Each structure stands twice: as C-alpha cells, then as structure tokens.
Length: 292
Image 1 (tube, rainbow, N blue to C red):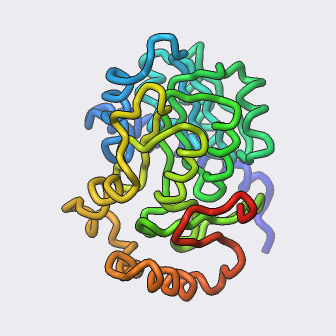
Image 2: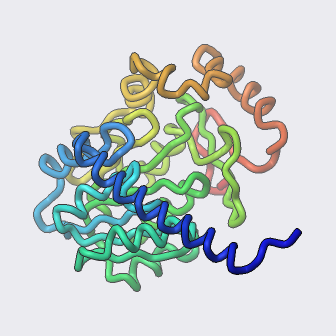
Image 3: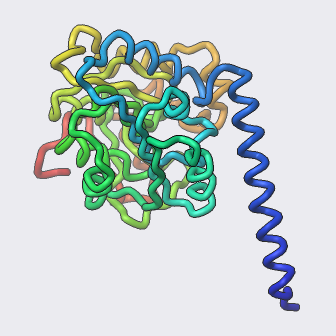
C-alpha cells in the first residue's frame, strides 16, 4: 500500500522538528558538561592554541565532516569564541542542522559537499580561508588521508586534529585507497598512526599527541620540540589508557594486533580484511612514492 504524499510530508516535517529539538538539547547538555568534543579534544586544542599557535595565524577553524556542528564537535567551542569557521558536511540532514547551528554567528559558514582531494582546496579557497589558518579538524571516516594530503600541499594550518584508525598499531602503515564512493564498514576506514607520521614528515608536520583516535599535529617550524614519535603517541594516547577497552569495546576483535609481530600483524590484517583485498595499502616501512 502506498503512503499518501501528505502523510509523507507530515512525517518529514515531524522528523525535521525532532532533529531541531535534539540539536537544541545537545547544545544545552554539552554546555553543562563543559565540552562539545567526544573526549578531551576541545581542552587539548585550547591548550595548544594558547601554547603554540602564533599570533599572526588567522583565528579560523575549518571543520571537515562537521556533522550537525555541535555533537562531538572539535570546533564548536571556537565558534562560540567568534572564530571564523567553515563547516563542510556531505549529509543533507546534518548539513541543515549545521547551518542552523551557525546561523547566529556572522563569521560562520556551512558548505554542503563530499570532501575529496580534488575539490577540498577549491572549497577552502572559494570560502576565503587563509593559507595560514588556525585549526583544521578532519573526520570523514574514509578518504581522510588523501584529503589531508591535499590540504597540507596548499595550506598551512597551525593545528590539525585528524581521526586515525586506532586499531592498527605502529609500525604498520595502513591506508585505505582513495575511493570517491567509499562507505564506512567494520574497522575498514582511514589510516594508521604510522602512515600519518610519514605524511607529517613529508609536509613538515609532527604529531603532538593522540587522544584515543584523534591525532593532534602542528608544523615543525614552531612545535618540533613538542613532537612524539608514532609509537610513543600511540602508547600514551590509546594503548595504555585505562578506559580504552571499555570505551572501544567494539575493537576487541582486532585486539590481537597489539601482541603480534609486524609480520604476523600484516597477515592478521590481510585475513581480517579479506573482503577488501586490493582496496588498501599495507606495509611495515614507509610507502614509496610509486606505491601511493
């Protein structure tokens, strides 16, 4: 039986109002707890902004994969401080809420697009983002490696927060191949912290720390003394955290990787991702230019 158009429209309207109400509740709830980010990313960003970000850097935040702009946001606290902000979101429903969350801020703009290495720099340039801007937050659950590489090739963000695939320990290099139609699936996404470390070295950046699955980066020219190697950052920020197995209970089926040799780990990953054979890069040593 076909549902009448009027009922479908009423249902859609009710869903829209419910989403708007939830957005308001999230703003209230997260403001009470003192942070909008998932874990301590907001506080960590504030510390590095105060300690490391040069005064000449534009107080601009670019949030790629911004969601509704509030829930688990690494950038909304900066929006509240009247930073200039560009939020990029592909999902139409989340974009509508993102636009609503930004509407009372004169320096905030939302952009609806699927971020890719081919379009992201033009999006930033057309939006008036400075070459040296304050903070980049990147979390798109897929082509993150390729989008970050594109941005760092043409921009110089002072601080970067980027999600990694926390299941893959050093020294393993894991990168999902570029796929414009990528869809997130069980543990198959993004890139490992060792692959990120190599990318940082290529662009003159380094790893400041890891907060579970979010890595903080900065340019070498003003933060080199604060850098951690991938193994140390991974151990301190994920592996040895007391709450890790509770917070990331869904990762237990890949926990064996933490006790395997690199060679054994590569075998484990090939078996675990057998259905995605050919869709990722995997190595113990840095990838060559010919590989990626």
